[in-house]
Image (cartoon, rainbow, N blue to C red; front, top):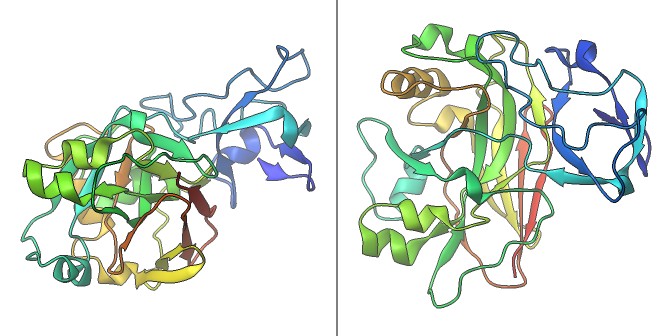
Length: 284
């Protein structure tokens, strides 16, 4: 998919989406009447549905060159994963700002897939809590079924990348002693509206930075090199105990500078190093 101007979208088709430079995967739903024979599908879904084959099998589900007006499309979260795996305290400075020790092995937790929302979708903050934070993160999208994958082969199983926001309820995180409720509210997993597909074996540059802003004010910025556990290590560690399926998401951890959210705030997540879709989330 690429922009055909300010008010329409050009659908590239599968041939252009299969790992080509700059190719993107997204999920949309048409508004209003049922689509006709020249329209895109009612819903482009499960872009990584082929468990063992081409991870970009359904990255674009319309004939090459087909166009659809943006006004006719409703953006959805770009993946519908079987699971969302997250990594806590994966940046030393972030662990320190919350008064926590740096883990000696990856600290994993889950977010429910129901928490995912696309960029621009308003998220209602639950009331009655003292602190709910934004956490800017790079998200790895699994492209091929993976079980017990060695670290040196991890990037062969990655379909691409997006930025996300691991919204976190600090009150419940402290109260519950585990993080299911704290991380699992509806809307607590904003995800950029499209996934940047990368060829198998693509290695993100270590100097690439994850960045976050609150109401336009810079809050977070750190290179991937600052991760305690890098992406290949995480992929091997996670796939050693659970099978990763196409479309599964790995939130890789947040840098220091997490910021408290209030109704009326707007959180932005971006990435410097290669092109990823920005994420903007208004909170109500």
